[in-house]
Image (cartoon, rainbow, N blue to C red; front, side, top):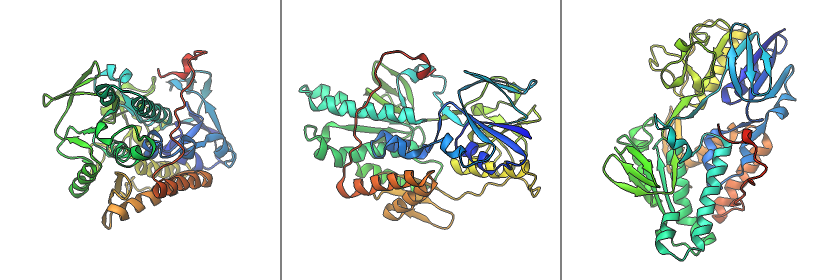
Length: 421
């Protein structure tokens, strides 16, 4: 029985593990986290809309349902394609076939110093960190008598006007408009400043122009300041310097401006393309290898319909996982991979959303309900679905919830492997 190792338990990795023929293969998933998470809702963790456990599903619970499948904890350090071994921080694992589904991480566009200065939203841990930062600033602002210091504490800037940027800005705008007067009466909403910065001429550039226009209108309703055609030149001493010449004082900068692939040492250097994506052939074999595959956000598959590679979204990852497992299971129909675009959507607070669907364009409450339904059914586990739905209903009716908890890890004893590398 061949041993297939999957690096990464995101949308691509978990779907391959579920669909592989366990009579032919023993499957191992390696991931630095011991759970599968749901990235589209990270911003709701950051804004205290849902609890982290509601969109996280332990790999070991899923493995109990799958024959000949196991999970190994650890971060992969390198791959040796000659000896067909993977080295993690804890062990070495041999494979017959390898599937790389490592996804993406934050792209700081040759500004590595930003990594230690800004907040990001590419993992559950990062979402919790941002939630703590937001709550910490609200609590400190409540007890600050200095008016200018209070305004400094309550300044939030989001860089990047894609779906994640628009959604976290919308969540902060909802907090400003609806939550403060109920839970933080010491703070006047005029003291809170939320700014969304985008380098192009419209928000949600991957969606239709109508969606961008409606999103801009919803952001305005939530009292969010916006900047278009505006690039960040530098961020020093808590001051954001913009290409327009404007300087903005900001102690909480949220970075959602771009992503880059999580490439692992040991793969052929000529297989690494723009954005640190791995060049693959029609069968998803990584260039320069024979038994190493790549799918999802990390894969760069170019064809006539997508000369610059497929979009780095969940639906592409899931569909590529299905296609690759049909090949590995010997059930391929021989046709090349074709992505079926089921549409795009983004939400900007309650009753405010935009949906570009194949059959229609939705906005407002219908789009918001559609967004809720699609995301709800996509979360793993009935318990998780029920928790998220309950939190949404409660927050919708009462404009509040019990999740605004400032829980920070204690400092000692120091564990280096718990920190970002």
